[in-house]
Image 1 (cartoon, rainbow, N blue to C red):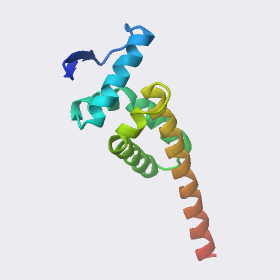
Image 2 (image 1 turned 120 degrees about the vertical axis):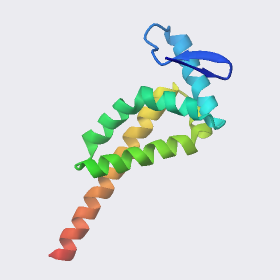
Image 3 (image 1 turned 120 degrees about the horizontal axis):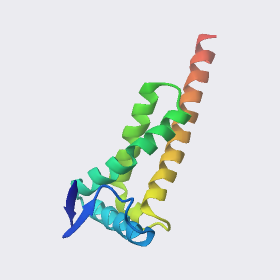
Image 4 (image 1 turned 90 degrees about the horizontal axis):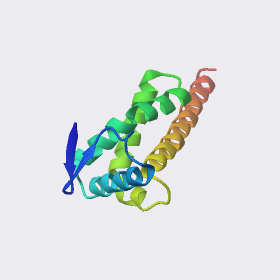
Length: 122
């Protein structure tokens, strides 16, 4: 399946693409998303959702916490696409690194909430 983003045909399958052109395609998608292109967001999400879900699932204890972290992560990516596209590194590595930080933050929050509940009940 291919989508047209800013006049270019971009395949969801990037395994046959060279690393340099893959990075270029990633940057094109990020810039398109930053300008509000929902199709670009969808392609990025389709490509990285399994990886980001695995990261959140690794750090968090409950399915509800994983869902909340995923929702927060992808909302953050959508709302901050301009900032993220300006960072050094490939867009995919930036989103994955953001997912790791986001999941770690949610895990700390989850742990603090459990400790607070224990303290209040104790």
